Each structure stands twice: as structure tokens, then as C-alpha cells.
Image (cartoon, rainbow, N blue to C red; front, side, top):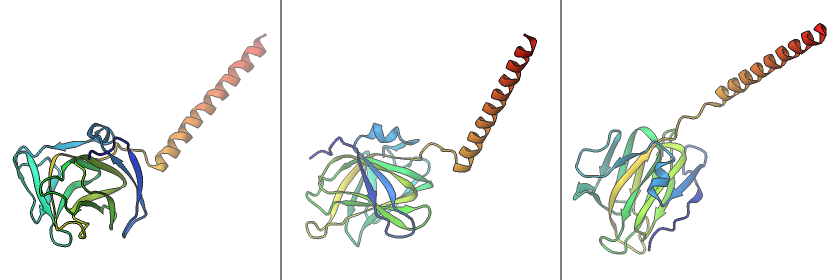
Length: 201
């Protein structure tokens, strides 16, 4: 089964530390890449993209893929982003090993605490997301212990990035105040010019 092409918005429940974040799920890599300053890691060699690292019980790079086996409560993989990230995604193939536990994506938030960004079960294809809460890491772990003993998967073309800088609320207020001041000055000047014109008549 392929992921649906729709972009789904879900509200992730924070398990600790911060308020709920808006999580947007993407099934198209180009669409996700367009939301942030995306960095792509294709796993062609063992040198990772700048800012990306991982720790794993079983994961390794080989054959142009990140190959891994997750076991709920025992084996997991954490991708870490220097400076934080607002997005993460990749092409996941969950077919190796057959039907398994699925993958749960848990964010380690920059402000402290964790939250679940989403889950994939039997699908293969691109899966990614953005979060309104910046995160320093994404932990991949198995979650369905009833229907599987592990989750063996391959990952290719992983991407991560941050949103473009947005002015702080205080900066917006100063900009609006400045624009209003310029408008007032121009209106006042126009009024003086019109008054002089009437006097000269």
C-alpha cells in the first residue's frame, strides 16, 4: 500500500515539557523540501550531511541505504540535528522482514520534553513531517508488540531542515509603527502642500 497523496494536518499530543505542536504530515518529498531549508542525506557513503548524526542499536549504512531493525522497548534509532530542525522525512521501505511492529517517530524537543510526530505501519514510500515546536532529535522505535516482534526497514533520501526566519512579534510591531509613522508624515506634508496651493489662489 502506498501513502495517500493528501497532506494531513494532525495535532500531536505533547507527552511532556511543552504545549501541543501542530504537526503537518507530508507524503511527497518535494513538497516537504519546499517548506524548509532542506538538507538531503542519500546514504551513498558513511559520511553524513553536516549537522546530522545518529545513534542506534542495530542501524547501519550500506548499499546506499540506512538499514535498521527496531524492537519496541529494546532497539531504537535516534537521528540528531545540530542546531535543531523543524522537519524530517525520508523514503521508508518497511517490507524487509515482512509485517512488523511499525515505526513511531518521537521528537526530542528543543525546549525540553518529547512528543509523538506520527506512526507508519505497513506502508512503503515517502513519509515526513514539520512541527511548530523545534526539535533536536527524532527517535524511531517499534510500537505494535501485538502484531510483530520487530520492524526491519530501509531508509533512503532522508531530509531535514528549519523554517525560514520569521520576524519576532516585537519586530512586527516596530515595523508597523514605522510604516504608520511614514504614512502620517506623508499625509501631513500633503496637507501643507494643499494649504499653500489654496493660499496662492
